[in-house]
Figure (tube, rainbow, N blue to C red):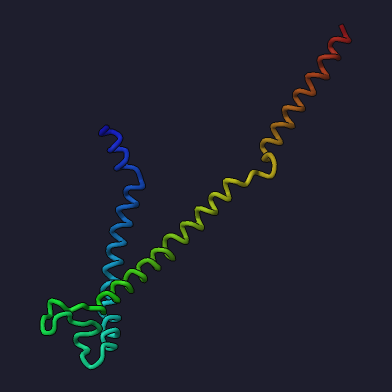
Length: 142
């Protein structure tokens, strides 16, 4: 049982997965910082004169704990869309194209035998044909 677990850990896929998680986490943090620093202020300006509060509303007047921050929700949606788009166009689409090319290459059969195979066939035929010619000639001389 432990050997199977060890094989699983040292197989290349687990290392690739770990690298992907680390890069994905770092990229998500980058996109989140971008949306917080650049997109959120733009969205908050749409909130009107109370631009400090941004887009949102308070359920109980005077109680900031009941504030519903729609700008934060919009930021999260934008962060998700940017992250998903980059992952798809940078990783998924090229990987899919590569896999299709590899699958297409495996399906193609060679046009004919290689030059080495043809040469070996010629040698075989020449040796086989020469033996047949010598066989009857030696029988007729006896």
